[in-house]
Image: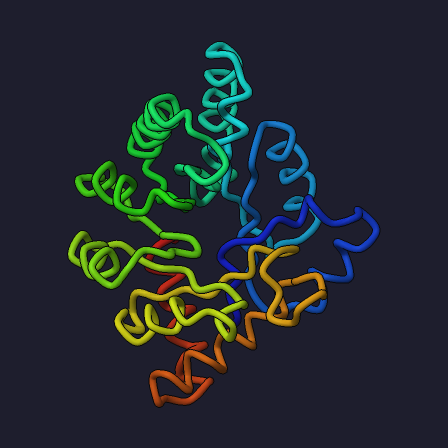
Length: 242
């Protein structure tokens, strides 16, 4: 069974979501980015049994909220703990924002919530890989590093901490992601799309079905069959999220 561990279905036109989901033979983890996204995600998941939910507030979206509104978002996640399998997409975004101290405070609150409701974390860490590893190294929940672009040392450190990595479909054009797949054992890898972003084909919109492309590249790098990659990734999914 295929797994897209990181997708944004709510970013697609509503009339296209059904087609995209129904042609994907596997599980999609819909990652919300703010409270409106969470509400849309609930509606989507009610329609499609293969769509699972991760609720979170994207780091730069969180900066736009008052402390009161951020706490409301945390409360919404807590209230829906039985409807979700993870907290995501959350983390640190240092490329687009320099408000680092506030981002760290917010991430710590989300980590505390994840430990309270016993849910894994799906982590964004653009230009903040080392800071994320340091903040999460003692976490009591499982950690999935989404589209991780840290160097070899950072990857090995994350492995030592027991973290997992989700590999996006643009791996074919990324030397860094190929290097990551060489280093990381297959039992620590998930596939993702970040759809509608990070398409393997330049100029085209991404979608969950493209995880087949990632599986093909992983199989080539690891010198194993695509079937073995798909089966192991599904086992990894079950270990982390079920």
